[in-house]
Length: 469
Image (cartoon, rainbow, N blue to C red; front, side, top):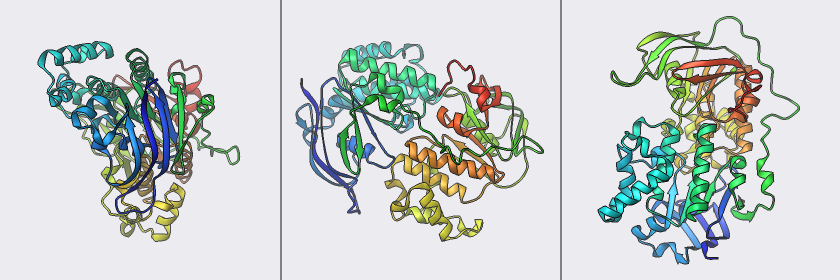
């Protein structure tokens, strides 16, 4: 078998730092493998994958050698790299650059100077393969998260790379979209013979497709001998103490949305259609539903960021905070600790509180680093910690466990349980059904712009056919 990817004694340190993120990494993958790359938040998975494609590699000092299909990656010019190594980012919005689906599909081939006839054939074949032909003429900003991720995959594969690297590709997909995406990825691997490497914190859904798995730990990589162990579900709370019991609903709601109608433009489709929902103090309320169903929009309405066309939003007072899908929106400082201290003057907390939060987030070693040098999961933790230092009365969180390993998800679950225990209302839009089952008190499912149901967490999952952790 041909060796698709060979990494020998690779080390890496970010610019301005002597600390090695990677330290003597060596691995070899045969052509046609479907490999899972697992490891803790901040272990260097994204860094390792990006080094295989120098065009997107971070600035820093690298040692060792990386070869793809027998060639050193430094020897591949842009065209050869595009046809040899494909890369799909965690967030498709960071990858999609064109306004329309068809143009996005053509963009890479145009840059490669592909002949018009070859381009049309490759786009047609790839569109049929992924079922894109039905929405080929759509605008990219109108697509759901699941379709955007599928487009990112298709527009990469239209250039026919032999090695495909994916960084947390299902982190923002609902459970049904995740299954569809993984099935398409499986076909790419088996039917097209493309070697696949997926960096993920959620390997359980991928085990059936994988031929091997590697764990990155302490800057080094080792084989995972027991793939079945990757199916284990994380326990977010210890048996003792268990998840605190939330108080029963009583009194005024922390935030209530009544008969809400909302759309982004006068000619746009309605996102919310007469929606009603209320979140109570002292409880964690999860919002679930398919990509594009309106969860993020609803959080924006609750936060006062969007003005309703009709309907009303009532709050019981106190600070409301919003964790956006992109945590970098909240960053403005040069160092992690300074980021946590930014709002200390107006919120009345001190350096000791910020340092304590660093420890609770598991970010003690990152205090002096620039926030943009953190992994995606570490950025998520930092943004959440910055908001929680404000001790909000209502915390509105968009995918709070996105890109986090099991240990970090436990930290988030415990922090939110404590916040709710102090009387705050927590509303979290999420696709993480393990988190919903173990941490949420109430669950609302959005569908067609309305709340299809609101139930206690245990009741919601009892008998649920498709939305199951």
